[in-house]
Amino acid sequence: MARDALIIEGYLAALATRLPGPRRARVAVLDELRDGLTEAAARHAESGSPPRVAAEAAVGEFGTVDQVAAAFAGELVTQQARHVVTALVVTGPLVGVWWLLLLAPTSPAGIPVLPLIGAAVLIGLLVLATTGSLSRWLPSAAPRRALTGATAVVVGCMAGDLGMLTALAIGFDAKLSALAIVAVLASLIRLSCSVYLLHACVSARQALSGDDRVSPRRSAG
View 1 (spheres, rainbow, N blue to C red):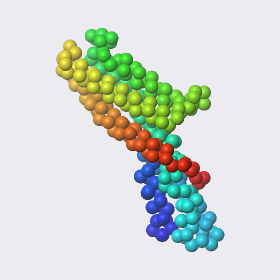
View 2 (view 1 turned 45 degrees about the horizontal axis):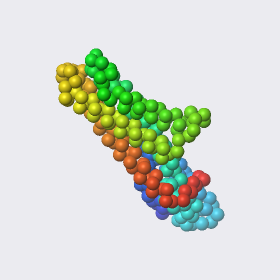
View 3 (view 1 turned 120 degrees about the vertical axis):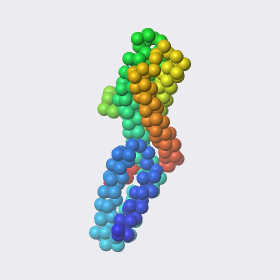
View 4 (view 1 turned 45 degrees about the vertical axis):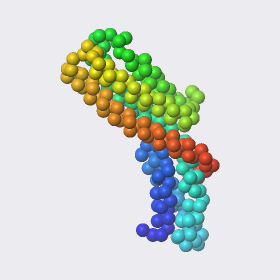
């Protein structure tokens, strides 16, 4: 690989370690920056600069790794919040239906975590509404607030699954039927996914907190 390409790829590799958010969104940002850097380096080369100097000048135009990471942090954190909430809202009914079939015959009011699950669903829908196309009519949620909402949804889902499993374990008048086994497995799978999503939220918050100390500079690519 040419020295100028190594400079650009090294810059992007360093930036990749600082960007929060879902993998697909981070890759899209890096691809966008790679195109912009390549075009900027080509312009400098056309002006007579050696390839290595042209690449260094292009990188200098875009700003430091900290500055560029800060410029994209809010956008990527918001996408992370939407990704987390969407994953849980989509999988929620797939898990909840088994518990409802198992426990509802006793009494839906006897399911202790229903209010908590309902609150998590409402928060999740609010996050999606205030960070998507509906934000044209609703107040737009700031990245930090959207991430806080997503974290609350994850914690609520985890508490709901643990509550259901605990209720079944201490004797919720439910025999260990095939339905009970499916419900337990569904909750255990979602719990493991929730741990991963919670870690993603914590990492995104750390990245956002770190970028608050950097003056953002969104480069025009």
